[in-house]
Image 1 (cartoon, rainbow, N blue to C red):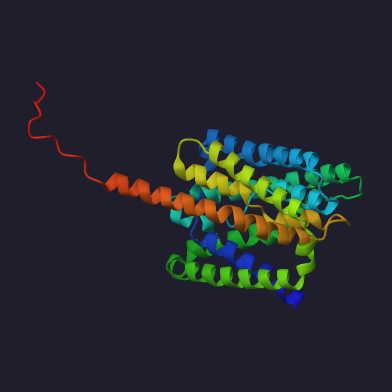
Image 2 (image 1 turned 180 degrees about the vertical axis):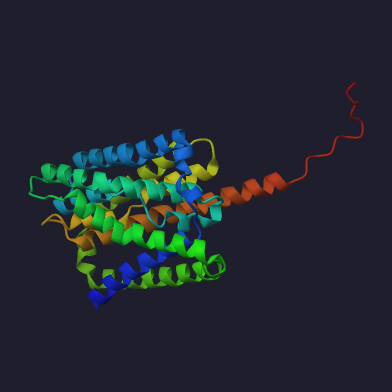
Length: 297
């Protein structure tokens, strides 16, 4: 049962990523390259500020080794691959798509460095080569994404009809398989003490605030970067976690599911209300001038 759930999660993730690629173009890939200021803010928020906050949290709170490992692995696993799907209703998804591409390519270089840093921090022997990182990220993310983009370019009518349906089906499979996985490993959740849950939620909430404040004046960019900072790249987290003898992969999965749901859902609801209010204000007619107003000369 557990093996089937893990396989289902991997297949669902690949299908979701492929469906995202179906609705994207090469112009979406280079979106951030044409906006260097936004690119710089995004990378600083995701790769500098969020890990620094997490390291501070780990040092300040009396957490167990497993929770510390889960927090730090999640902190350095930037680049949520499902970001464009989460933000479909908030307008232009090119920023989110381009951010996922950039962060996934960076992960090929940065993931081995994070593994070396965490190994030194915990005093254990762990190593991940750039070749292994490139192979894992390419198979899990880049290959289905490129396949989806290729299908979108060759068969635009087909992909326009099936992309959303495939995405919805894969999302349902992912949710069910994740629930089965967590139910079968409930003792892992029970092992995360209340202080560990608080630390996870606090870290993700602070990451959300970092992204929101770093996104700049555009409300859509703020929402995208906030979710990007608080949502983790599960594939990278698993790659990092499995290089260590200590933290089990299921701890990373459980931590991600809990923190991501409890933090991102309320934020997205708030942003949805803000967007609806903005649209309502923009369509409201301007008040008419009073009848006794004196015309300007």
